[in-house]
Amino acid sequence: MIRGIAGVIAGVMLGTFVIVLLEMLGHLVYPFPPGLDPKDHQALAAFMKSAPITAWLFVLFAYAAGSFVAGATGTWIGRNAWVGWLNGGILMVLGLIGLKMMPHPVWFWVVSLALYLPCAWLGARLLRPKA
Image (cartoon, rainbow, N blue to C red; front, side):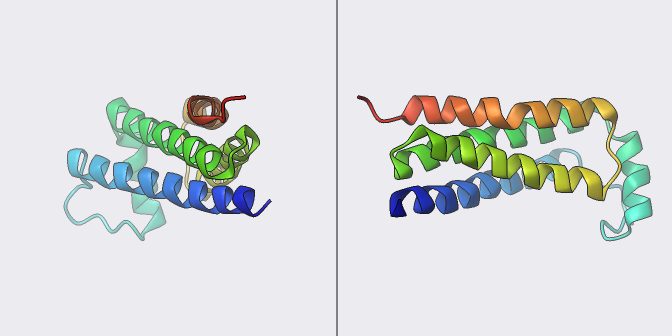
């Protein structure tokens, strides 16, 4: 049980780290316009409406990679694939919170929420204990 809890904590932390790191890389590739204050929700929402599709795909890649890493890490530490699935579910809930904080296109909602569990499953599947 302790391994499972450690797997959840480590998996979610590492998965979140991967997402943040890749999103930071995305901001280097697709920087904010000069003078945009990311803390200004209205200005950020206006920028998000004009962001290119490739910027949105970069974010989706970050979510998929983070969920994969969370699933793999949780399964490796927890020695059980359910830990990887749980990590994917936790990241999906965190992603839903992020979606509700700022306006996103409907297609982004659908695709992003559909990525978390399958990517965590794939990571868990690759590192699941062999019986």
